[in-house]
Picture (spheres, rainbow, N blue to C red):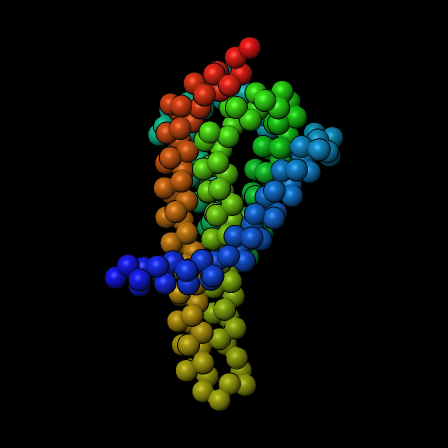
Length: 206
């Protein structure tokens, strides 16, 4: 049984690794771009940061586990379900969230930013990247359905059904990745609500 689980995990990793790599490259690239070249993102990010500050001040954004989880999972779910639309909105959301984090880093001392971001950010940012990967896999699965509509196939019905079966497996792969995202975001929300501030205060003490 353990051998079968191990083999399945290895096979699953091999099926998903390029989607994860693509999502990671996009996310990291725009995080770094917004950090080192913030002027390019001023018009987009200044208002977003102000809205975030206003949300915290007005009590719309609460540092509570449930509230944080709902907010973050909504973002992740939007990224994932945008795979239905060829992942174009997913790309925008990946870029936007990456740019937001990188840009925010330029508005704070680096040690302060890292101390108050990394404890929960390790889990949260990983979840966002995996949401992008799940979206790309979902898009691939949907496109594969249309690839099954091959007009010159000898047995059109058989060819279509074979492609449909493959597509369903790809879509299930993407859904399975979202379960991992769900777990990561629960952990991230708990840490952000209960642990991050304490760690940040300790690490930034003079």
